[in-house]
Length: 270
Image (cartoon, rainbow, N blue to C red):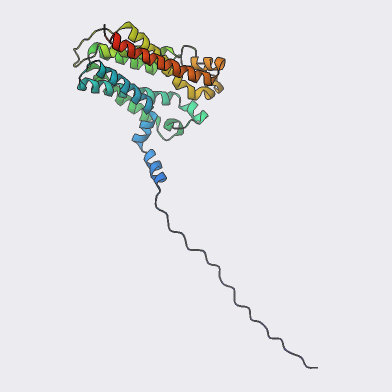
């Protein structure tokens, strides 16, 4: 019986595993650039200054100054003064609220996020104070005093009354001093104008209360969770947040309309 030898199949040697070539590093995207720019110190300071409120307030007072017949250079001084002062209030607000903002994980808060050092913010406030005093006095001693008092009241509002039903008080006082700042203002530290109309002062104070309500709307839920009971939250708990929003917007529009009518019919100064 013959035997056949089976041919042995030679298995090829194992091929060593090779890693795929590394992909080339992608260039920085637009999002990366924006993030890197957003972490710059000046940008972080700008974000912490509550820029929208500061810009709107400065523009509003500058427009009123222009409509009252003030020359361009005085309108520019009003805009710069209010912009610096409002930025100081915004920086101070973020410093006071940094622990609560961190606990509530509120966005766009560089101080609470740890991206902006509190010492840097305090330095910015000090520089703003050195700048806002001569800017204020350049419109006249009485006008400058009126604005500086409004600024101090705004800073105190970040630490006083804000958790109770008197939270509206500092807003009313600071906004109520703005007509005096404009009516007594002029060019040069020795300038003395005239007192403001009472109706304009009352309406300006009412506008400050309206702004307080509008500013409080986005934080009603965390404020309620933290046990804060300022006036907007007390009203919201009674009538509901949506109704409060509609009511605050409607009253704000009415107050602004009243200011326009009073400015055209009575004027800013007595």
